[in-house]
Image (cartoon, rainbow, N blue to C red; front, side):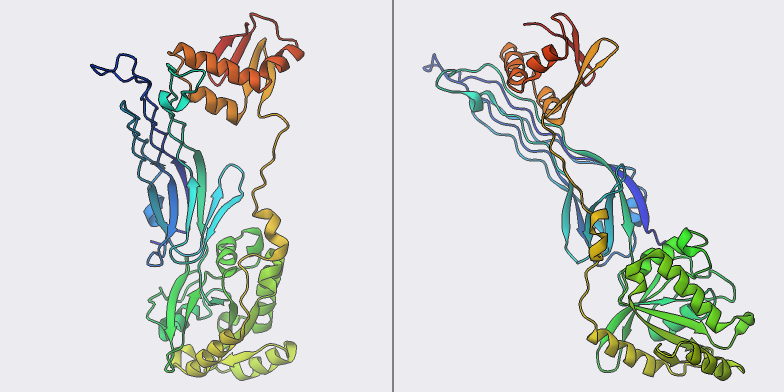
Length: 424
């Protein structure tokens, strides 16, 4: 099974809770605080494994959740960090935030790693809050929740050469003859529904990866047929090898076929349009092939054309040696075109205030990552923790902002799903 796209919910591990504890030993009547810190929650990491070719291992995982950090304990014993979850993906995997459609990571080399969801930090034990003015704090923190994201993984085939062309022009046959790949071959359209990869090894020990990509039809750039699948995979190839049925089998016109392919490519992407390209004139054993080839070269005099007959295994050695030469002369290129960067960068905007306040049917709703994190890490069963929480909010200017907006003492203030009373 070839799987090139999947969506999955990720939940990083919550941090371990801090501990509220005091030394209680026989000859230490005034033992100080000794509550340890909680351990960090597990991260969720994506790592490239060059042995994988599809995303099928992730296809059936609807949710991945990392473990919680271990809670802190007395005697200043800190909790252990949770183990990270490492998800293996093939080379060429792009990870998107499914909510914003922005790219989080693009993993193209073996062993490349990226932390997609960070685990929450461990809560601090009461020993960590001891100061000269407050030597015996009676509160500690809860662990911070880990990040949660809905992400989309998309695999773009990593190949040196992409065989492209109309359906049934012989792409799969060519790949089966020059590599150990075993693609499906049949005398009907769209035999290839997913990319097939083959490693080509020459007699001089040179090698490259070739991909037989799904066939094109007119309108592919708009998503018709297998268009978007084909064009997405073609983006990662270094050379586009147009396979043309020069024998006009099934009444095809080689010139029209090539023009239709170029038209769809140019509509889809400037980067794809400017890739190095060659033409493989296949089915040269057929009766009209020579005449068609002559007319084709007159229409496209600047194209590099290689004549073959895949079914008779003719011209393939010359084709492969020339493709290897072209590959060795190509400059190294970036994965993304310089004009496309803005689509792939996540911009983080810094608000003037780390929170927002709005009035919803008489309830003042307080939102903001920093405030919500503080709320989740506060033990409201400990009086000193509640006092600290209120002091922190006041320090952020929340109390002054509520009054400025017209909030009165006794009004209800909501943080997440909890409602408090606004008072001194």
